[in-house]
Image (tube, rainbow, N blue to C red; front, top):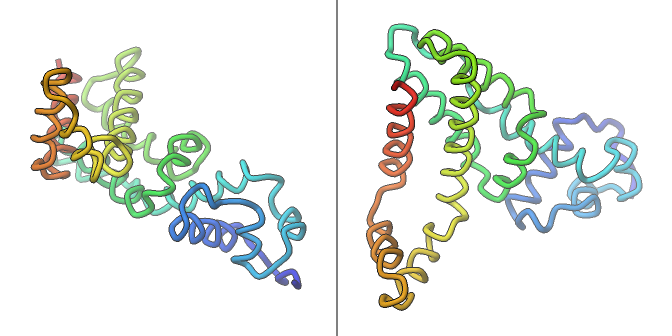
Amino acid sequence: MPRPRSLDPGRLAAAALAVIDREGLAALSMRTVAKELAMSPMGLYRYVADRDELEGLVVDRVLEAVDSSPPSPDAPWRDRIETMAERLRTAVARHPEAIALTLAHRHRSPGGLRWSETVLGILTEAGIDGTRRVVALRALHAYVTGAIQLEHLGPLAGPGTSAIAALPGDRFPRLTETARTAAGVDPDEEFLGGLRMLLRGLET
């Protein structure tokens, strides 16, 4: 197959993301992306060194959609953090099959770095600095990415909830009860509820 005359990182990332969205993360390879671009697998190595670099481009593509501009300074700091968390959740959730890549590569992505910089600015204005600011940022990252992963891939998401609810109640009474309750919890309510618990803890 002929090599495209010009293959910029954006087009390459879009092709890789299309493969992931359609076939799942396990289908991502130099071969499948080359096929998506109608080129030879060897030709693709002219643009990326390996799959790791390809994954990084995918994460850049996902996170560049995150609005990292500071929310209105008139809003309370916790509301502004909520806004930032929702922006990240919305962008990442558009591509649930790529969530695992986002967790692995977000530290190298310009979009992810811009998001963190804005969040750090809000935390600083709230008087959270030094060691507390380190812990706060990491806790927020862990919560947001973990909640997104659980919502789309975790054992209490989708069909997994029913499977856990069907476990022997005498061996796992609290887990089965929680799974039954989880089936009726709105995802937005769950995400914001957990986030607000975390933010209240940061305030104290």
